[in-house]
Image (cartoon, rainbow, N blue to C red; front, side):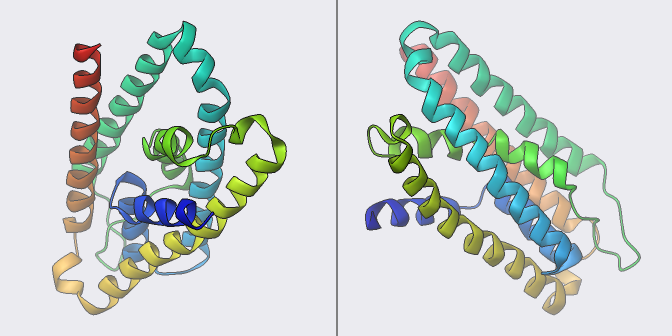
Length: 199
């Protein structure tokens, strides 16, 4: 199981839509109760997404491949929407820092994060979602990995927000997060288009 935990840790540490939003929350709110709610929302969204993909992907790919493609397209569209929303709607708090992302927005962003599909398709051992004991073991490892990683990203934001206010004040955080999410969405769109063309 060590290789599973290492694979999870490696993927979860990579900057992406959810991690960028957690970083932003750390900048605007610090490592407090609100940020903990965001981390729990991330955890819950990943559990739902990974379970849904793991249980249904084999059947969908066998007979309804277009459903998988359509789902990925919707996920990419939503990521572009989040990116543009962050870029054009900067809201400031009294401190001059951008307001934190809402729990529901982070939850939806995580539901559309392609990392969940990666975990269900490549990291989970064969038969994980067909056996309750294997499923619970896999999800327990995932939970033990994702919660500390979420704390790390929020903590980094809190440190940057406290020590580098001139660099990250104003709308710079929102614009940076917007660019990261937009880049991630563009890469996902390119990968999706390449697979469709090859198929």
